[in-house]
Amino acid sequence: MPNMSLDKVKMPEQEPDIRNKNFKEVALGYEEAMAIEEAQRCLNCKTKPCVSGCPVNVKIPEFIQLVAEGRFEEAYDKIKETNSLPAVCGRVCPQESQCEQLCVRAKKGESVGIGRLERFVADWHMKNGSRAVNKAESNGIKVAVVGSGPAGLTCAGDLAKLGYEVTVFEAFHVPGGVLMYGIPEFRLPKALVQEEIQTVKDLGVDIRTNMVIGKVLSIDELKEEGYKAVFIGSGAGLPSFMKIPGENLNGVYSANEFLTRINLMSAYKFPDADTPVFVGKSVAVVGGGNVAMDAARSAKRLGAERVYIIYRRSEAEMPARLEEVHHAKEEGIIFKVLTNPKRILGTDDGWVKGIECVDMELGEPDKSGRRRPVEKKGSEHILDLETVIIAIGQSPNPLISKTTPGLDIQSWGGIIVEEETGATSKSGVYAGGDAVTGAATVILAMGAGKKAAESIHKLLSEA
Image 1 (cartoon, rainbow, N blue to C red):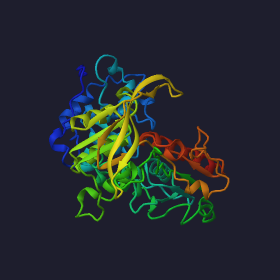
Image 2 (cartoon, rainbow, N blue to C red):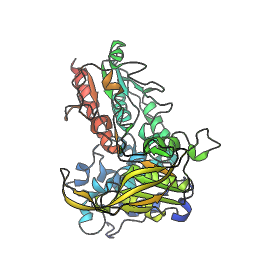
Image 3 (tube, rainbow, N blue to C red):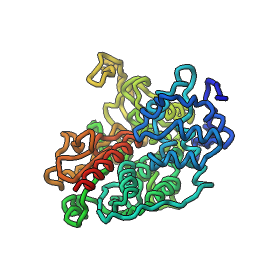
Image 4 (cartoon, rainbow, N blue to C red):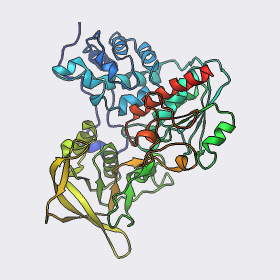
């Protein structure tokens, strides 16, 4: 009999006043009995609307049915048919605006906890499942993948399963891209990311680190080395700034640098790790997305007494996941919405001492459909601070576009591709993920990697 409870089985979590002082994972995951109970809420609809909401088309009702029957390893195999990184997706996908949004149970009550169940299955497999991988027989055709983030790993894994000899070129010293440098340990443990990457390596994918494509080798040089196709999944690592006075002061970070120091270089373990990060007692994070929440919650864990989120629109317009906003509030982050920075104030010796803001009100809708924020005259005020973190977005690094003749790009730096195939203007070169769209979600990048792998296979199998 299905479980007709209107509410999801609650996910166990660390208490807010405990977790805001450590970097251990916030959500603790389901136990077996909880997972079975939640899986029994699925009606196993014939129309399967949830699947159409998943960018990688996970066979959701099928894997959930297997969980309901306690067949966890088979559930893992079912997810892995289309998703290379289930432990990651179960944690960081915006399920509430994708698969769960379309769940029939959401019409009356809460949707089935699809993300929570995916996480449970992946974690169960890592503890209890078989590590045996069926490696495909090589077809002798070499393919290069630039970037080992979600798009690159997905493309590489799918091509390896088809027998291609795939080499991934990663600029950093460890693979994982934004999964390693962008998302904090308390949301996505790094050891888990590396375990997921190992499953891609086990398929035969060769990952080469410290390889900055555009400097060490160009895209054309990769083709000269015998790679029959190239997929560019190099992400969006170039931070945006506000272009206001004081952004060059000591104590101003891009969220990209701040989070990279903490996540990839373990600054939260300093001095046991080599990389320091300065926070001070009072911090402002400018922005309203998931990156802003990650930066603010990290600053709190590093000992800041007051951490502000400064966002120029209302909370309803915030692009961050509701769960991230909820967790940030629980942890004591102070939200200053309808507030916009005008300038950052500094000491005589060049350090941040405050930020001048102005209150905003919402006017007419702009091109995005969101109401445009308008300044309230005479509402200027100053917050005393020691650190400012700018989290207003990132764009693709121009290194590849500048060193690749014939590669068409958008005015803001994104690589132009055919939407259906991921093909660029350059023959045999494909692209996907944040390098094309600008900063977006992990699962959308994975969907782009999957689409490009299909297109590359079609190109090379017809050659």
